[in-house]
Length: 377
Image 1 (cartoon, rainbow, N blue to C red):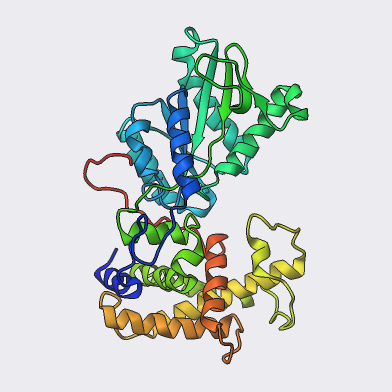
Image 2 (cartoon, rainbow, N blue to C red):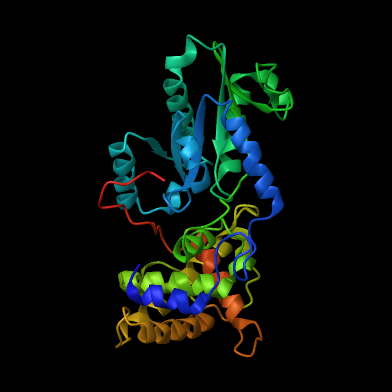
């Protein structure tokens, strides 16, 4: 992270601390503490762990509090949301994990073929203990919103096709096994030996090591927007994009509409950007698609123009603040948010973050691949 970004982050967030009871943020509720204890207990019984991380932040989305325990287990790291991650950098991350003798796959939890490859690797990793154990347990862990639930749902569908008896059950009960209570349930994915995949609650660590990690988790949705504030998250995203020179790469999009996009969209279009988010996915008609593409082009053009016309240095704190302020104003015009709206800044931030989180602004990875030998957590 550039010096300008670091200073803006520190100034913008003040003395906020990402820890239990620290500063103005209390983001580690009691149910997460209970979930952490439950996960620790179940990890002791698991033969292999699938640790789901966000491919955009391969290190920042690791559950640091569980790493010492995970390091002693058979483990596969699944970098989910690979469709939102920069492919070239993602390859470097896969090489990084491989160089540390850690099994790692990039996946799309919504893609059946992608999930099958993951399950094939899991079965391969368990071959060495198959002869000794008639029943094997695989646990899925991950911080909130890395796509763990989507992965579990895909595993359920694959398991149901393999073992039809599971189609009538939301979950196939595991056990009784030595030391395993019958209320632990999972999906059977293999027979002889029987391999079950157990779910676990999404849980964050009791403390986040630094503000940058906390902002990355907030940007990708693992920390609720209301905890940090949409405007602060959008400010951080703009700071990173500007210091990387990302808007300048959107120069070719300036003539995009003339190359095939329709004319100006209807100002009265009723489409809601929230419908792009995973929980709400109505089928898009051609008008909706054109509206979104047109909006994305306007947003990218607004950021490109403000950046290219800027005479200051993005490494200078004051200059970067001025640029970001100009970009907020440009985004407000591009998104057609009324100037007099009392919450215009928040509305701009929410829409801008929605476009980023759904991949409309392009693929990104925010963690830097370590240049020196380091742990995988």
